[in-house]
Amino acid sequence: MKRTSSETHRQHSRSRPAIMAAGIVLVLVGCLMLLLPLVGGGASWTWNTKTLSDLQGAKINALPQGNTSDGVRLAPQGTRPVSLISAPLTLGSDVGRVVEVACLLPDAEKPSMQTVNFLWQVRTRDESGKIVEAENYQFEPTQAMLGKTLSVVRFSVTVPPEDLHRIGFQFPEAEGSVVIARIAFPTLSLSERDSLAWSQAIEGEPFAAHSINFLRGPSILGNSINSLLVGLSAICLGVVLFVASLRRRRVRVAVVVGVVIGVWAIEDARATWNLNRNSKEEVGRFAKADKRVDVWTQAHGSYEIAWAADLLVENADPGLKFCVVSDDTFLVPHRLAYLVAPRLSIAEDCKEADFIIVMFSSRARFDPDTQILTMPDDSMIDARPVAQLSDYCYILRRNAK
Image 1 (cartoon, helix red, strand yellow):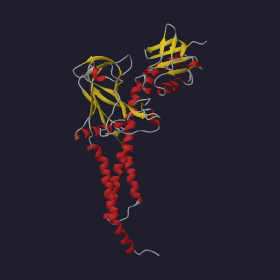
Image 2 (cartoon, one colour; image 1 turned 30 degrees about the vertical axis):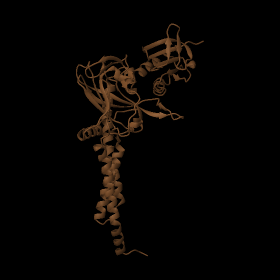
Image 3 (cartoon, rainbow, N blue to C red; image 1 turned 90 degrees about the horizontal axis):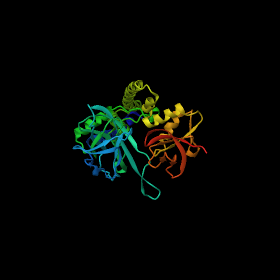
Image 4 (cartoon, rainbow, N blue to C red; image 1 turned 180 degrees about the vertical axis):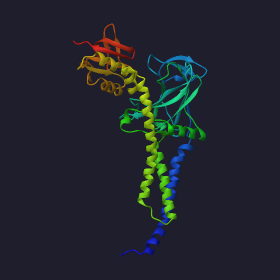
């Protein structure tokens, strides 16, 4: 039996309040998702690094040079960038999701744009429930103008602060010493949060190893761009439902699909702009690199890896094998294997390798007098030196028996 127009009208009238209520709820939920990060604060936490005694329990990849009126002065060790990592943390769940470092470059002749990396390590537990450190640090880069006056560089924290085990900052482009005054989770005013949110929204996302598959998008005050797009979609859909209920019309599927596509197009346009800007910057950077080691350094983010790969490619006979001894058991061996293939291949067991690359290993020890390399597991290998970049980066040739 077909419904009459009057029955259909009555049915729409009965559902009108529900549609209007759903629209209002969606608008409210969307507004909360967009506004809460802007107005929410959080508890503060501060680690003042004014004196060397304040660094107790910290990991320092630098040479401490004493105190200044602003903070601890740290000098680079060889070619390794200055980095300072906190002692193990115990942060509450109410701590805000913005972290900052106050720093300056005392040796800088004039202010310059510098890369600053925020490092973090999450807290994990073993099978017995004991807290252990994760093997690797994650990092997030940004650009900041640094000079002889104190500057504050801020980052969004993308993991719950209570899950953080250690945090730190690295200055890969600083040519001289770095003075660090404090590392903190600050309490920001509304205007400061709004200004930071805008700067993070328009900040370019640099190319990384994952960029061939996807772009992460900006993290705005600790919230992913996806959560903000969902909030905007909820507001738009809520308005569509509310207007449809007022006009006594059905919600058309095409309109809903159009809203979703329209919101997606906003981020797609931003990502396209970001890719275009990154492409121009990358072309300019690589155009200035006339040596292979410089090109590889820019592409893979490590001068040490580029240095070792360049020497192996130039001097090692095809078909030989190499192994890597490093605290980083993923990045270093994989990047080296990629750069030297197919000329050389990697061996898991250093006793079967022709070359041994020791890089960033805290436990490996080489005695040039006896020509013995003591491995992290205390086993020993006869080897002779081939090349050395620093105390923590060198290449050995295994002595065949």
